[in-house]
Image (tube, rainbow, N blue to C red; front, side):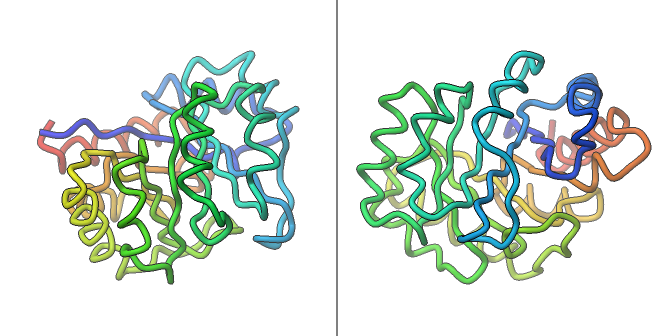
Length: 224
């Protein structure tokens, strides 16, 4: 039996009513609040910075899970943790000294995660697997919400779990991109323990009910 966490992504929320939307997701059983930070370089859009994370921290009752889709994330980690991030993930594609970055995040008191883009192989984790608190597997190409889930991500989840196991790590695997009621059970069965969902929650008319339904589907697959 495995505990599965639901992490609604505010990228799909109403930015004019973030407090309302976050509260609805939390009532529905959200475990984390996922914050997608984009810089217009590593990915095309520009989203939010530490000032928004600080504002969210004042009203959210769940851990803020900050995903840095930025070039040179080392420049920003301190500011986001100071603003309230409890989890920080960086892309292996952007960090030249990954072990140092992961260690720094932990020293600041946050959980440290590494992210793999769809075309980045699971083998890229081999030399860092024992150091990370979690791994985030992208099931769409990062940058935009409401994209379709990439089917072969299921096999990738299994490969990532194998790499972690070989390192003696039980770090949870987070999955982000195109997660919905239709595939929640499948990704959990393949090894995912943290489900990021944006459009499937905030793209509905009832974020509370959508969060609750996604949790039920994930729990069923996890045998809870």
